[in-house]
Length: 326
Image (cartoon, rainbow, N blue to C red):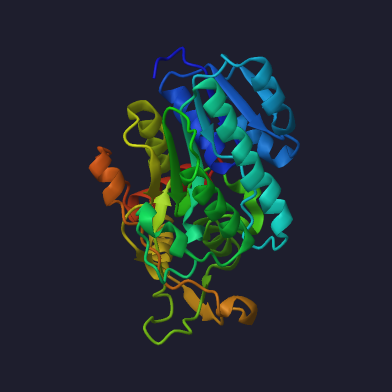
Protein backbone atom coordinates (compact mmCIF):
# COMPACT_ATOMS: atom_id res chain seq x y z
CA UNK A 1 0.00 0.00 0.00
CA UNK A 2 1.39 3.38 -1.03
CA UNK A 3 1.10 6.30 1.40
CA UNK A 4 -0.93 8.27 -1.14
CA UNK A 5 -3.44 5.41 -1.57
CA UNK A 6 -7.09 6.34 -1.03
CA UNK A 7 -8.46 4.05 1.68
CA UNK A 8 -12.08 3.84 2.79
CA UNK A 9 -13.02 2.83 6.34
CA UNK A 10 -16.69 2.15 7.00
CA UNK A 11 -17.88 2.25 10.59
CA UNK A 12 -15.13 4.83 11.03
CA UNK A 13 -16.71 6.56 14.04
CA UNK A 14 -17.05 3.28 15.94
CA UNK A 15 -14.69 1.38 18.19
CA UNK A 16 -12.56 -0.67 15.80
CA UNK A 17 -13.08 1.65 12.82
CA UNK A 18 -11.79 4.72 14.64
CA UNK A 19 -8.87 2.76 16.06
CA UNK A 20 -7.97 1.54 12.57
CA UNK A 21 -8.18 5.14 11.31
CA UNK A 22 -5.66 6.22 13.94
CA UNK A 23 -3.50 3.17 13.19
CA UNK A 24 -3.40 4.10 9.50
CA UNK A 25 -2.54 7.71 10.39
CA UNK A 26 0.39 6.52 12.50
CA UNK A 27 1.65 4.53 9.52
CA UNK A 28 1.54 7.68 7.42
CA UNK A 29 -1.78 7.19 5.58
CA UNK A 30 -3.87 10.37 5.48
CA UNK A 31 -5.93 10.02 2.28
CA UNK A 32 -8.73 8.30 4.18
CA UNK A 33 -12.42 8.34 3.31
CA UNK A 34 -14.44 7.79 6.46
CA UNK A 35 -17.96 6.37 6.21
CA UNK A 36 -20.50 6.23 9.05
CA UNK A 37 -23.67 8.02 10.09
CA UNK A 38 -21.66 10.47 12.29
CA UNK A 39 -24.87 11.44 14.10
CA UNK A 40 -23.95 10.44 17.66
CA UNK A 41 -22.07 13.11 19.60
CA UNK A 42 -20.65 10.47 21.96
CA UNK A 43 -18.71 9.00 19.02
CA UNK A 44 -17.21 12.32 17.91
CA UNK A 45 -14.17 12.12 20.24
CA UNK A 46 -13.17 8.84 18.53
CA UNK A 47 -12.17 10.86 15.45
CA UNK A 48 -10.74 13.94 17.17
CA UNK A 49 -7.24 14.60 15.89
CA UNK A 50 -7.49 12.03 13.09
CA UNK A 51 -6.35 13.05 9.60
CA UNK A 52 -8.58 12.15 6.66
CA UNK A 53 -9.68 13.54 3.33
CA UNK A 54 -13.47 13.35 3.66
CA UNK A 55 -16.42 12.03 5.63
CA UNK A 56 -19.41 10.50 3.85
CA UNK A 57 -22.69 9.42 5.43
CA UNK A 58 -23.18 5.70 5.02
CA UNK A 59 -26.51 6.23 3.21
CA UNK A 60 -24.77 8.42 0.62
CA UNK A 61 -21.64 6.36 0.18
CA UNK A 62 -22.76 3.91 -2.52
CA UNK A 63 -24.00 6.70 -4.80
CA UNK A 64 -20.82 8.71 -4.22
CA UNK A 65 -18.62 5.72 -5.08
CA UNK A 66 -20.61 5.02 -8.24
CA UNK A 67 -20.08 8.62 -9.26
CA UNK A 68 -16.36 8.40 -8.40
CA UNK A 69 -15.46 4.81 -9.37
CA UNK A 70 -11.68 5.38 -9.38
CA UNK A 71 -11.61 7.27 -6.09
CA UNK A 72 -10.80 4.33 -3.79
CA UNK A 73 -7.79 2.01 -3.80
CA UNK A 74 -8.60 -0.15 -0.76
CA UNK A 75 -11.70 -0.80 1.36
CA UNK A 76 -11.99 -1.70 5.04
CA UNK A 77 -15.66 -2.46 5.68
CA UNK A 78 -16.09 -2.48 9.46
CA UNK A 79 -19.46 -0.77 9.75
CA UNK A 80 -22.22 -2.91 11.26
CA UNK A 81 -24.97 -3.06 13.82
CA UNK A 82 -23.09 -4.98 16.52
CA UNK A 83 -25.66 -5.15 19.32
CA UNK A 84 -26.04 -8.87 20.09
CA UNK A 85 -29.10 -8.12 22.22
CA UNK A 86 -30.98 -6.52 19.29
CA UNK A 87 -33.44 -9.28 18.43
CA UNK A 88 -35.05 -7.59 15.42
CA UNK A 89 -33.43 -9.49 12.57
CA UNK A 90 -34.58 -6.90 10.03
CA UNK A 91 -32.19 -4.33 11.55
CA UNK A 92 -29.25 -6.71 11.13
CA UNK A 93 -30.37 -7.84 7.68
CA UNK A 94 -30.45 -4.27 6.39
CA UNK A 95 -27.28 -2.92 8.02
CA UNK A 96 -25.09 -6.02 8.11
CA UNK A 97 -26.18 -8.28 5.26
CA UNK A 98 -27.61 -6.07 2.53
CA UNK A 99 -25.28 -3.12 3.08
CA UNK A 100 -22.29 -5.48 2.99
CA UNK A 101 -23.52 -6.92 -0.31
CA UNK A 102 -23.60 -3.38 -1.71
CA UNK A 103 -20.01 -2.76 -0.58
CA UNK A 104 -18.90 -6.08 -2.10
CA UNK A 105 -20.55 -5.35 -5.43
CA UNK A 106 -18.94 -1.90 -5.59
CA UNK A 107 -15.54 -3.47 -4.88
CA UNK A 108 -16.18 -5.93 -7.73
CA UNK A 109 -17.19 -3.15 -10.13
CA UNK A 110 -14.21 -0.95 -9.29
CA UNK A 111 -11.60 -3.67 -8.77
CA UNK A 112 -11.02 -2.66 -5.15
CA UNK A 113 -9.47 -5.06 -2.59
CA UNK A 114 -11.72 -5.59 0.44
CA UNK A 115 -11.31 -6.57 4.08
CA UNK A 116 -14.59 -6.84 5.98
CA UNK A 117 -15.57 -7.57 9.56
CA UNK A 118 -17.21 -10.90 10.23
CA UNK A 119 -17.59 -12.13 13.81
CA UNK A 120 -16.90 -15.03 16.13
CA UNK A 121 -20.64 -14.81 16.89
CA UNK A 122 -21.05 -16.87 13.71
CA UNK A 123 -19.74 -19.88 15.67
CA UNK A 124 -22.76 -19.95 17.94
CA UNK A 125 -22.35 -22.31 20.88
CA UNK A 126 -18.98 -23.48 19.61
CA UNK A 127 -20.25 -27.03 19.18
CA UNK A 128 -18.55 -27.14 15.77
CA UNK A 129 -15.31 -25.71 17.13
CA UNK A 130 -13.66 -22.43 16.18
CA UNK A 131 -11.86 -23.30 12.97
CA UNK A 132 -12.04 -20.96 9.98
CA UNK A 133 -12.13 -23.91 7.58
CA UNK A 134 -14.54 -22.70 4.91
CA UNK A 135 -15.63 -26.27 4.14
CA UNK A 136 -17.29 -26.39 7.57
CA UNK A 137 -18.98 -23.00 7.36
CA UNK A 138 -22.50 -24.27 6.60
CA UNK A 139 -22.53 -26.37 9.78
CA UNK A 140 -22.36 -23.28 12.02
CA UNK A 141 -25.47 -22.22 13.95
CA UNK A 142 -25.32 -18.64 15.31
CA UNK A 143 -27.29 -17.97 18.48
CA UNK A 144 -28.59 -14.45 17.76
CA UNK A 145 -29.71 -12.27 14.83
CA UNK A 146 -26.39 -10.38 14.80
CA UNK A 147 -24.38 -13.60 14.43
CA UNK A 148 -26.83 -14.89 11.85
CA UNK A 149 -26.50 -11.77 9.67
CA UNK A 150 -22.70 -12.04 9.74
CA UNK A 151 -22.85 -15.76 8.97
CA UNK A 152 -25.20 -15.23 6.06
CA UNK A 153 -22.89 -12.66 4.52
CA UNK A 154 -19.92 -15.03 4.86
CA UNK A 155 -21.95 -17.71 3.08
CA UNK A 156 -23.05 -15.26 0.39
CA UNK A 157 -19.49 -14.03 -0.21
CA UNK A 158 -18.16 -17.56 -0.66
CA UNK A 159 -20.91 -18.30 -3.19
CA UNK A 160 -20.20 -15.29 -5.43
CA UNK A 161 -18.90 -15.98 -8.95
CA UNK A 162 -17.59 -12.42 -9.15
CA UNK A 163 -15.29 -11.22 -6.39
CA UNK A 164 -13.03 -8.26 -5.60
CA UNK A 165 -9.42 -8.82 -6.76
CA UNK A 166 -8.67 -9.71 -3.14
CA UNK A 167 -11.06 -10.12 -0.24
CA UNK A 168 -10.91 -11.31 3.35
CA UNK A 169 -13.57 -11.66 6.03
CA UNK A 170 -12.15 -11.44 9.56
CA UNK A 171 -14.00 -13.21 12.37
CA UNK A 172 -13.33 -10.88 15.30
CA UNK A 173 -13.34 -12.55 18.71
CA UNK A 174 -13.61 -10.59 22.01
CA UNK A 175 -11.94 -7.32 21.03
CA UNK A 176 -11.03 -4.80 23.74
CA UNK A 177 -9.17 -1.51 23.85
CA UNK A 178 -9.58 2.27 23.62
CA UNK A 179 -12.36 4.14 21.80
CA UNK A 180 -15.25 2.01 23.11
CA UNK A 181 -16.58 4.62 25.56
CA UNK A 182 -19.77 5.03 23.49
CA UNK A 183 -20.70 1.33 23.40
CA UNK A 184 -22.66 1.22 26.65
CA UNK A 185 -23.64 -2.32 27.64
CA UNK A 186 -21.89 -3.70 24.52
CA UNK A 187 -18.48 -2.44 25.68
CA UNK A 188 -15.88 -5.01 26.71
CA UNK A 189 -15.80 -6.75 30.08
CA UNK A 190 -12.61 -4.82 30.84
CA UNK A 191 -14.42 -1.50 30.38
CA UNK A 192 -17.27 -2.51 32.68
CA UNK A 193 -15.03 -4.16 35.27
CA UNK A 194 -12.81 -1.07 35.47
CA UNK A 195 -15.82 1.12 36.19
CA UNK A 196 -17.15 -1.34 38.77
CA UNK A 197 -13.82 -1.11 40.57
CA UNK A 198 -13.89 2.70 40.41
CA UNK A 199 -17.42 2.88 41.76
CA UNK A 200 -17.68 -0.11 44.12
CA UNK A 201 -14.15 -1.34 44.72
CA UNK A 202 -15.10 -4.80 43.44
CA UNK A 203 -16.00 -6.75 40.32
CA UNK A 204 -19.03 -9.02 39.98
CA UNK A 205 -18.64 -11.96 37.62
CA UNK A 206 -21.20 -14.49 36.50
CA UNK A 207 -21.26 -17.69 38.50
CA UNK A 208 -20.70 -20.87 36.49
CA UNK A 209 -23.74 -23.03 35.81
CA UNK A 210 -21.69 -25.65 33.98
CA UNK A 211 -20.12 -28.58 35.84
CA UNK A 212 -16.87 -28.36 33.82
CA UNK A 213 -16.15 -24.73 34.73
CA UNK A 214 -15.51 -23.09 38.10
CA UNK A 215 -16.94 -19.68 38.98
CA UNK A 216 -14.99 -17.18 36.90
CA UNK A 217 -13.38 -20.02 34.99
CA UNK A 218 -15.45 -19.36 31.88
CA UNK A 219 -13.03 -18.71 29.02
CA UNK A 220 -12.89 -16.29 26.10
CA UNK A 221 -10.45 -15.36 23.39
CA UNK A 222 -9.72 -11.75 24.36
CA UNK A 223 -7.82 -9.86 21.65
CA UNK A 224 -6.33 -6.35 21.86
CA UNK A 225 -7.67 -3.93 19.24
CA UNK A 226 -4.14 -3.00 18.11
CA UNK A 227 -3.63 -6.62 17.03
CA UNK A 228 -6.92 -6.51 15.10
CA UNK A 229 -5.79 -3.34 13.29
CA UNK A 230 -2.48 -5.04 12.46
CA UNK A 231 -4.29 -8.05 10.97
CA UNK A 232 -6.59 -5.84 8.90
CA UNK A 233 -3.70 -3.81 7.55
CA UNK A 234 -1.51 -6.83 6.82
CA UNK A 235 -4.25 -8.54 4.83
CA UNK A 236 -4.80 -5.62 2.48
CA UNK A 237 -1.10 -4.86 2.24
CA UNK A 238 0.05 -8.43 1.56
CA UNK A 239 -3.10 -9.91 -0.02
CA UNK A 240 -2.60 -13.65 0.57
CA UNK A 241 -5.30 -16.12 -0.52
CA UNK A 242 -8.78 -14.60 -0.38
CA UNK A 243 -11.17 -16.08 2.14
CA UNK A 244 -12.38 -16.04 5.73
CA UNK A 245 -9.89 -15.79 8.58
CA UNK A 246 -10.16 -15.90 12.36
CA UNK A 247 -8.99 -12.79 14.21
CA UNK A 248 -8.27 -13.53 17.85
CA UNK A 249 -5.38 -14.03 20.23
CA UNK A 250 -5.46 -17.78 19.70
CA UNK A 251 -5.44 -18.38 23.44
CA UNK A 252 -8.52 -18.66 25.65
CA UNK A 253 -8.21 -17.01 29.06
CA UNK A 254 -10.57 -17.00 32.05
CA UNK A 255 -12.59 -14.06 33.26
CA UNK A 256 -10.67 -14.38 36.53
CA UNK A 257 -7.41 -13.89 34.60
CA UNK A 258 -8.90 -10.81 32.98
CA UNK A 259 -10.17 -9.18 36.18
CA UNK A 260 -7.01 -9.98 38.12
CA UNK A 261 -5.03 -8.22 35.39
CA UNK A 262 -7.19 -5.12 35.86
CA UNK A 263 -6.67 -5.05 39.64
CA UNK A 264 -2.95 -5.57 39.08
CA UNK A 265 -2.81 -2.71 36.58
CA UNK A 266 -4.48 -0.45 39.13
CA UNK A 267 -2.22 -1.75 41.95
CA UNK A 268 -5.29 -2.68 43.98
CA UNK A 269 -6.07 -5.86 45.95
CA UNK A 270 -8.42 -8.29 44.24
CA UNK A 271 -12.08 -8.09 45.27
CA UNK A 272 -14.17 -10.43 43.12
CA UNK A 273 -17.67 -11.71 43.85
CA UNK A 274 -20.06 -13.89 41.85
CA UNK A 275 -23.68 -13.50 40.81
CA UNK A 276 -25.98 -15.87 38.96
CA UNK A 277 -26.00 -15.66 35.18
CA UNK A 278 -29.40 -14.15 34.24
CA UNK A 279 -31.89 -16.90 33.49
CA UNK A 280 -32.86 -15.42 30.11
CA UNK A 281 -29.33 -15.85 28.69
CA UNK A 282 -28.17 -18.83 30.72
CA UNK A 283 -29.07 -21.45 28.12
CA UNK A 284 -27.16 -19.57 25.40
CA UNK A 285 -24.15 -18.57 27.45
CA UNK A 286 -20.77 -19.45 25.93
CA UNK A 287 -18.30 -21.05 28.33
CA UNK A 288 -15.38 -21.24 25.91
CA UNK A 289 -14.15 -19.48 22.78
CA UNK A 290 -10.70 -19.75 21.22
CA UNK A 291 -9.69 -18.71 17.73
CA UNK A 292 -7.79 -21.25 15.69
CA UNK A 293 -5.23 -18.84 14.21
CA UNK A 294 -3.27 -21.29 12.09
CA UNK A 295 -4.81 -20.20 8.78
CA UNK A 296 -3.72 -16.57 9.13
CA UNK A 297 -0.31 -17.62 10.43
CA UNK A 298 0.21 -20.03 7.53
CA UNK A 299 -0.78 -17.20 5.15
CA UNK A 300 2.24 -15.30 6.48
CA UNK A 301 1.01 -13.18 9.40
CA UNK A 302 3.66 -13.81 12.04
CA UNK A 303 3.50 -10.63 14.14
CA UNK A 304 3.59 -11.46 17.87
CA UNK A 305 0.24 -10.75 19.51
CA UNK A 306 -0.28 -8.79 22.71
CA UNK A 307 -0.60 -10.85 25.88
CA UNK A 308 -3.74 -10.36 27.97
CA UNK A 309 -1.73 -8.88 30.82
CA UNK A 310 0.13 -6.40 28.58
CA UNK A 311 -3.02 -5.41 26.67
CA UNK A 312 -5.06 -4.86 29.83
CA UNK A 313 -2.26 -2.83 31.43
CA UNK A 314 -1.95 -0.61 28.36
CA UNK A 315 -5.71 -0.12 28.05
CA UNK A 316 -6.27 0.58 31.74
CA UNK A 317 -3.25 2.81 32.44
CA UNK A 318 -3.01 4.72 29.17
CA UNK A 319 -6.71 5.14 28.36
CA UNK A 320 -9.32 4.21 30.97
CA UNK A 321 -7.63 5.91 33.93
CA UNK A 322 -7.24 9.16 31.98
CA UNK A 323 -10.31 8.89 29.73
CA UNK A 324 -8.03 9.16 26.71
CA UNK A 325 -8.70 8.12 23.12
CA UNK A 326 -6.41 6.50 20.56
